[in-house]
Length: 466
Image 1 (spheres, rainbow, N blue to C red):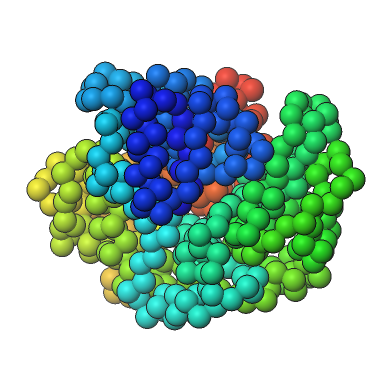
Image 2 (cartoon, one colour):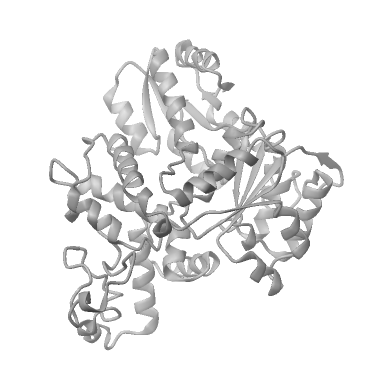
């Protein structure tokens, strides 16, 4: 665990740092958020930031987003100033910790972040086999390729492998190759020198250097432009990188984990992915099963997410009712674990009963099923496949799944219907771009282009959540 302490708070925040050190964390201290951003850009990575509420927390979090630095922020303040706490949370802080620091509270915060990053639930036999293989290869230095549909937990598995490896005390750095524009990804991976290109106002350490002695995750590596794949291959083979705008090579020691939601052999055959890079990454392959293929994990995961978001939103934890369990197990989970997580987040917020009831669980379309019903169990024509699902069909989808709704599309352009469908899907996914693209059956790049076009037209688009 790498903890960044930002601010002074009359010395109290330094006490929090000392407690974190005693708990095994590596601590770096910055006087203010500007110094913190500079440290992060120069390779001083962190897994968590504890920030004095007197600092410009909102500006700091916005800067983190702009620099594509993913790190939870915990606000700290002297005493129990409820107004300061509420303001910090509204500005984007994940939690508020009162000072002087309580050793048990600091330990709990560190433990919660660590647990959230590497929690692996595997009660289903199919998933148990995958975890067994992960445990076996984790201590090695082998490059690992994790495949599976979007939302199956590939990044969580990557963090699990890192936590079980000999590099667990070193950084775990993730790069989403699908989410970063092509012209910025090279700089993100390898870094750049000041003045290397327009906007390069300072030197930046790349993710390879930041992950030195640790693990580098190349998430959705098949989305990387072929021209950059050659540079990536060289960096992996030679164990060195060259920052953009520099001729000096920098030695790096990283373990590579790559993920993809595509058929990589097909991508190679179609010339979209370099064969030599594929062989370099494919030393050990871990294929993650879709959630519908591990039914024994559905309820366990659902309860885990319900408890997680109940605690995060300060609401009572609730056990799943029998009807809720039945509803969850009957669904096909096209969006996999990510869809289940979003569903349970929404459910715990709107639940009105002592147990988490079935009506609080809103499923996309309400028509997917884990298995097709027998012929004599088919619902009558025009009936819903799940009559208990109270989720109304989206206006974009009206008429696409229910013949009786076709008239609602008459007079509308294809572009209008497509826009509504994309916006509705993003809302269902709580803004998660990757999940929405998977449900819509389009690439993340196509979805991003659509979103940018809608924004240019003044259309309100749900805020990004991955």
